[in-house]
Image (cartoon, rainbow, N blue to C red; front, side, top):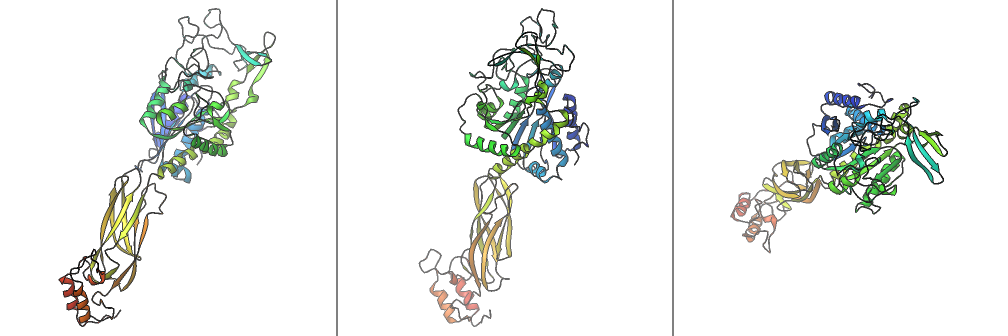
Length: 543
């Protein structure tokens, strides 16, 4: 299906906040069977932070949940385009695209395309903006956000002044004017707090990236979860048991996993590394523990993993080191640096190229959650037990079938018992998780010719079950015969009556028990068995 064939379906421009909201609401109205859009909170500027849930709502069976979040940082617009694109594609192609249909049938996908919803406006005024729009008095003059950088020369860039020396370059100023007439320029930006340093785990750890100073790009905020945006994610994660979660960023190309606050590995390092390796193979990007780059405090990944036991990842999806341009500055060894927006975001004509490279992340994560969940879904037949291996024609016998639910959910399913290919009976079973039961089926042998029959049972797979190797259980051979000839000469004579009488009173526990003398199949040789043989005295069997 053509992803352009819906309102705002233009992937050659960066969607602003209003366009993203309109797109989500359009999907919600147009595809109600697979889309649910809702607000998870509001930003500092009172904008709704929307989440879209994608799943086939006609399948109400409990499904594994995964979460994708875009746009923690204002200047990383491409990180919102990717999850938005996937949401549109999944909704529009459900039922036509086999892979998307599968993952929406068997998982719930939650997407927050843009977390830093105030960032769209902020970055339109200052392409360097990273943080949210919390009001911060960075110059401590009692006023908020009154002097951000400006495009003073009108060339379309806001330039940063850097001082370069042997060891590298350090920023020393910005292009702009003195907006608040205090004799200083660009000293009080819009916002804010680095949302990806504001999560509650190891928020104030001693790290390389995560600052207590409001003027720093990685300002962690005044307290853990001080920001409405991170609280919205926290509350969403506390409401749902997500199996996996991915946050999208730009500025490098990298697949990262916890820990960020320390170089020590997590207890699940082997699993994290395995997933990262497989993602890396899909998108051709390097991978590693986040702290391989630098240590960072209060990150999304660390909190999701530590506090919610979620396998959380960060995918850094784009960089262009050639985008940065330099012009001589006002004094020796200084340079004007520009092109930061292009460093973090591809040219609009290449947005879809970047998106398509990283789309496999969504299907991989959803499929992995489904597979893990399916390992916790399944029923099995563990025994098929007839009362004896020799059964007389024309009698009813009980066949016991034991079934088990080794999954995590209560299951309703059918169990069918067969003699060769003939159905003996079908019953519906309800079993709670990790329980078993034995069900009795009545087998009337009247219509069965003499011979050997294989008894077996089959449990129909439950929704989400993929390993059905133990859904079938074959017991063995049962001999159905004319019951009144116990001596095997095809004639019911006095010798047959005597043989049954000699076993009078025997049961399966008796030393001389033989099921052939239990004519009526009640596990006891009694007067009724002797009478039954006597009533057929003189008859012959013609098998």
